[in-house]
Amino acid sequence: MRDGPFLVPVLGDQLSHDLAALRAVDRDDAVVLMMEVADETTYVKHHKAKIAFILSAMRHHAEALRAEGWTVDYVRLDDPDNTGSFTGEVARAVKRHRPRAIHVTEAGEWRVRAMLESWADRFSIPVTIHEDDRFLCSHAEFDTWAAARKQMRMEFFYRDMRRRTGLLLDQDGQPEGGQWNYDAENRKPAPGRDLLMPQPIRFRPDAVTEEVLGIVAERFADHIGSLDSFHFATTREEALRQQKRFLDEALPRFGDYQDAMLTDEPFLWHSVLSPYLNVGLLDPLALCREVETRFRAGKVPLNCAEGFIRQIIGWREYVRGVYWHEGPDYGSRNALNATRDLPGFYWTGETDMRCMAQAIGQTISQAYAHHIQRLMITGNFALIAGIDPRQVHVWYLEVYADAYEWVEMPNTVGMALFADGGLLGSKPYAAGGAYINRMSDYCGRCRYDVKKRVGEDACPFNALYWDFIARNGKKLARNPRMAMPYRNWARMTDEDRAAIREQAARFLSSLA
Image (cartoon, rainbow, N blue to C red; front, side, top):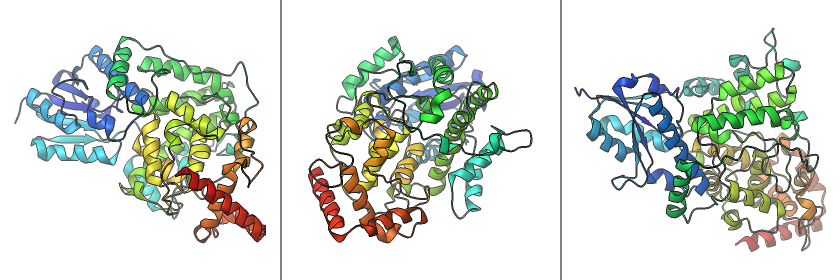
């Protein structure tokens, strides 16, 4: 038996002081191992700002752990002896510290989980993989919930999570206001440019972050994105400041306008907290309880509080459950047989479609777009254009600072692209230009006419939408939620249908 300390590897999305593996050991008899490794920066070509955010947050977290009395062995990306992988760095740490056992919190994705599960045999020492109890629903609990249902609809999972947490329940255990879901009240277009519109805090990089930005700029010059607008919080204290900014200034109108879009306004009333939740700088349940407190104090309308809480304990927990329940092959599903290559403008934002240029342009500059831009602009286009789901999945994983496979893959494969055949969503979220025009101001200054289906200046979303309806009829026409589009398609004349499909074919041909 080795008599060395416990070794506690802490991964880049585990930047929480209350981590299960840390609770399992005595800090005076443990070494925390934190590793910046090339494999994790390049298994897909992550956005420069995403890499910089995670590396800087890791370095700040290491210092915070040291301040609490932990011994931290930190391996930097530019260490000349860095092996470039988690397993390689654990192997080096085992030689340095001769630990008697390894304690680690479970990984957030299948790829890394396989690494952790190989360590016991590889290093011939005990390895305990602790459940990540920062999430509210365990894998076993989700599997039990899913097994009891023919359809895994999020709404019913969400209600169970409300009951479990007690959030927004009255004294009788019923939902506040008599409804579980106020989404119908949360679909208002933005009221126009508002000089008092809240803005997230743009944190000025400190010396640690500046050093990281220099490393990323040099080492990842060929990755998508810019570092010029880098603004992310990189410490828990900063993340809590942004949480307070959102709760004070944006949450009271978040629900009403969460689906709205405005030109050159990337944030609107959104929280911009998902990067901090997903790396562990913020506690999701504590955040939701603070939202509830503000509702009960009369500071936040019920539709806003409920809409936000649903995103956290409902959707966020649900997509994680789906990811682990469905297994590592979930990302290869392609129920609609979409095979077209992702167009080049997804990496440049250079397109005459103003909605796409806006959503992709801010993604490149900010490593951020809010959920309706992802679902109904870039995701909707990929869906109706028949883009290969695997390519779309990789793009989303690359470009957003909050993207980790457990949350990104179900949102992309299931919600945006319907590639799982309806496991996650009851219908494809396909739409033409009318939806975008209703929920944004993008169309007014676009070179395309949102009201036209055919012609040189017709909005591409219109012909692509009807072409999507036509080519997927065998798979979708019997879906009750798709009955109206198929009735409308059937009412068109043969000439109109032919003209629309020809218009779509010409546009799709131009993408190549």
